[in-house]
Amino acid sequence: MEIAMIAAIDQQNAIGLDGDQLVYLSGDLKRFKQLTKGHAIVMGRKTFNALPKGALSDRLNIVLTKNPDLSFPGCTVVTSIEAAIEAADGHQKLFIIGGGKVYQSFMHLTQRLYLTHIDHSFEGADTWFPKIYPQKWRVIEKEGPFTDDKSGLRYYYETLEKAGS
Image (cartoon, rainbow, N blue to C red; front, side, top):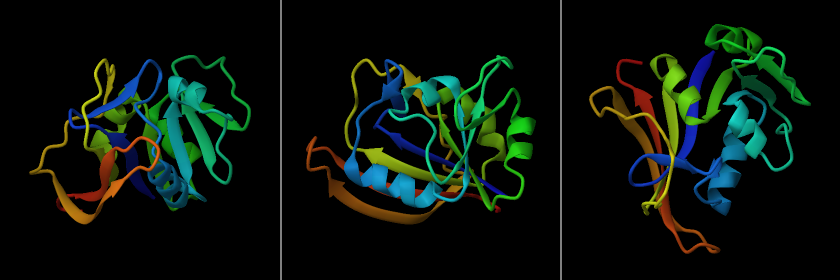
């Protein structure tokens, strides 16, 4: 099973503000759905709580939390990285979708990054994607730039693979 991360990051590697994404980009949301559909996804409790309609359809939703007593409709709740990987057994890909602590916890196991780079720095951002070391990752695909119709923000997609994978 391939472990991959998917995230939208700004120029400072920020991913969140006040418990939510920095911005909603229509193209990014479509890409997220297209890439993750049919696969397992892992998220932290705060990321799950930020989902507008709860568990995402057509995916195995796994919530990683320290509290084993929590339950979320349509989700498998786990308390460790190992349990999350075990819960995703039988899936071709396991996508890590946030938040910051969950990304950090899985970075050493991740083989591929699907990033949306937003050409903007969001003031007040409070959640960050882990630092990406260029010597450890190689760009295998780049698309864009695009401009979001609603926000006017420019962005591009980048897919990276762990060097030596």
